[in-house]
Length: 272
Image (cartoon, rainbow, N blue to C red; front, side, top):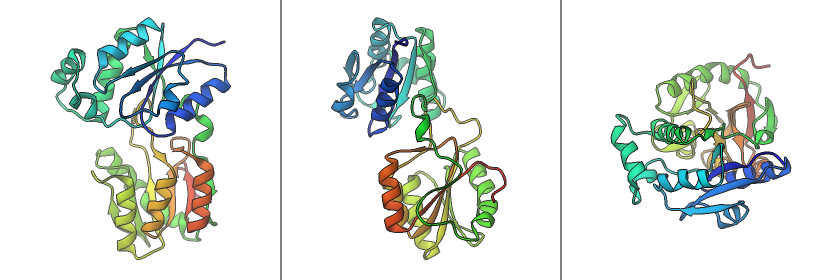
């Protein structure tokens, strides 16, 4: 049996996939669950489990110390602001007061720093779910259109530039023209907004930003992403291979086939 690892479990099926992946490798997880966020079915599989309120950073650190945790994984969405908005404890307030910029990168980075002081190293969020990472080429839906290579060559560097400026991580393009750039509204809204402007057969590209902290901020697509693409009549969804998690892959494939949305993995290298 390998050493026990801590899991900071947020919303959705992502934490469940981490638990299943860890257990398949004979690793027990001590689960830090959050009221109003974590699925109780996920929390019940922890050995042990501690229920906390969002913002109870001191409680999280104490739990991991008592459980003898030396490594931890963050999985599942927790809105960064909620870490401090819902009755933050003294430890969380102290961190918040020191931060000049308060965004996902700085907030979660500060939490990781406090865990490191307690002897807990934060592992990449893809730990135990490597099988769910996007691969290169066709992953779901119909065959790629003939002009996909040209569209990627045009849109990929633009998406990377947008991500580098911390504006967003997705763009929607059609025939060498930008239809939409992701902003505060998020990926799903961008797919619908850009696809509507394109009038169908648009290509969406979702990337990572340079130096993205993969301990907390891993790009994710799932069934809802495909439904949003379909609603916006986006024909192709391009994601970054090796760095994007595909959640509920079977359902993604079913929906992509049903709605004729091509899901394509690209690594930044030349497209064939």
